[in-house]
Length: 512
Image 1 (cartoon, rainbow, N blue to C red):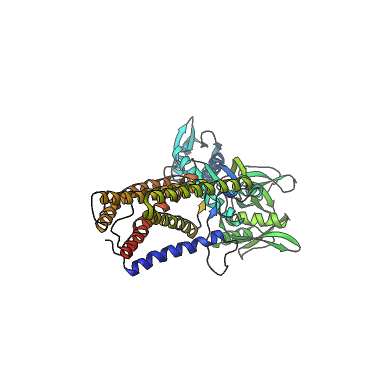
Image 2: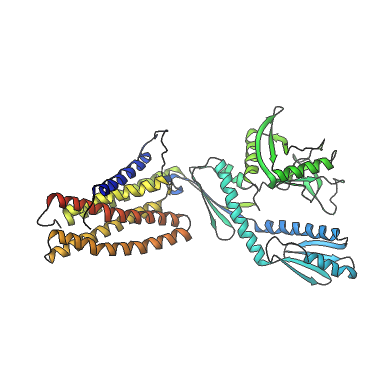
């Protein structure tokens, strides 16, 4: 049990050297570019930056679904050669009200409504009230749609933020309809707010034959440049969800956005432009018409361009939004905080001082109480700190103030383990055991206790990491990594140092 082979010792030393090598980039201004260096990123509280709390507009989400449901009902009744007196939406009760044309058609109308395909199982509830059919969205389906919309929004927000070049943003869900966004290093988040405040839902519609009046199945939408409004058909002929790429480019001396569709989008675009040559075609972004060109001929290549008064920045931002995808509903900023870099510097300074003071006090304590064995415990403690930093660097983790507190707490836990071993050895010496027997019994009795206590702490902090958010996860991550490195440095490295010293000196008494 107290024997270390040469291969095992080389392995332990090799792990320590590799850890030290992985830490180097964090202390170098410009690491060698030819090597795949990784560094620890500083969090918002250390580096400074911006904090945004975003809220998803669930009312718009519900309104869009009701509008879609109304169109499905209208189309279903017309396809079955059935009429209706009136169809209207009620956003308050989340329902669509249908007034049948006659009593004789009510049963057929009911069959059409029963054949509607819900997008979520159990989404629709059909009832009859005061001679009208009521098709309602169930409360559970509304909550389920909101949860799914927040999850999709997080991914879309992440793609948009990544495209801006922001380094190591933190994006997390808060509650049922909110998203927390932390942007280290960004002190002016205005462009980010503009990008996130745009839903970027692009659709393509035919303009109504009477563009000055909104009839059934049409809506008045504003033209660009405050040039009034025109009526466009509610039916979506080509959906922007079928875009595969978008890029800002120059054409005839002006900035335009070039679009490329996937196979379905290309087929829809070819069909609508082939069947409607000579008719105006509206390109709509978030309820506003970007442009309404006349279809001069069939477009079958699956490509198109959006013209307008674009600058290089506005064209690039629009292309970025379209590439990232449309948000299922608008996001509004309900809270914003900016942290200056001076606070970050002060936080780093305070954190480094606390780590240094804590580390020095622990080192002195171990030297005073356990002499040579305390020195070996200090060496293992320093190796523990290096290994934690190495693992954080390897995975390019984000270090925050709670994370620094977790590292300091880990060092205290590592000292506890070394103290437990040394006290066990001291007890064996007091009972009159010889040095080799005292070492063996001390290590053996302390090992199980150390493993049990660290295993329970490991499980607790894994749960904190899984179910926590933000600072809690960063704290839990630092301690979880620290527990693993503590077990290695305490049960392997410090033991190896003591055993090598004993094998070399063969002392008659242990310095405890």
